[in-house]
Length: 441
Image (cartoon, rainbow, N blue to C red; front, side):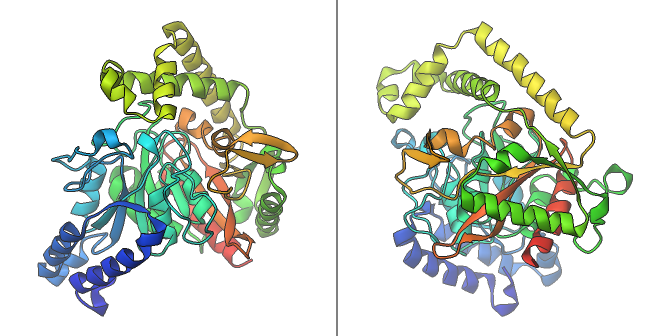
């Protein structure tokens, strides 16, 4: 927030008035934090100018997903079961944002406990009638609506990148473990990530520098610089998941193909690769997801009255997970290790891996099946098809929106860019360069 146009308090007041008017139809927020936001703005206004200017996110309004503890709001995680849960302490990620001067204005709607990829309550602010994705759907919608430049989400199978793709904004899943998950409601321990959703890559970088200052401080010989004005495209080797590019709806395929042509014309070296995928990936994901979710929710599974209050999809997933044997889980983890090794080998000769974030444009919000190339696919399975791999391997991955594929309803295709683990800062540099290049095309 640029306070040169007035005090932080006045700007927050105007923003809260806008949200009150527009969220009546969008429903992106499960809770507003008007009093806390105004108090934070007052504290910012009370600081001497040098102290205020030293804060990296001074006055930036932010929405936080409703799986992340954000006092004084309830953290219900999209479940009636937790209506009364009000955390005392903020999640570590929220604490870092607030310490950097960010102003939390609301809590974003999520799918039930983060188990889905639809966030059905939220209405797409740009393409009504189509899904905002999930489970960080409220966070992505708040950014797409223009209320906030950035929001915080979580990603267990694609839940940052999927809604970012559906809403035409940028979503970044860092390397696993780089951003603390303390204070975040656990879904799947070995897959859960916290990261930013933002209007552009530069804003993602600003937020990520606060969430992971150590990782973003890497410089010199530890990584190759790739600023928008300085990237030598001829030195960049991109592994393109050609089969995933081909297996998209026509609008997505055409838009991604145009982006690839633009990158090749700039001099980037494009090499075809085959990402490890189904049926092995599907089996690994289902086993690990269900088993670890059941472990994390043991207290609910042991309480029939609480279990009965869960939506059927959540309850059935937990019950299925409780039936996964240790032998089956260990076999899935061994297979996951092979997936990780396969991705590491793919990244040996290339700098990054490129695929469509989603194989389709944002589907209708109430779709149960999505038709693609003459076949019907389950909504959830299709939307996580390209994203879940990098939750299992832990690689940093970013969803980058492309120009609108269907201008009439403003839906956009999205590129997924992934790099080697701990090359988060480098990936953001390349992504910003790519964002600039493609916007100029």
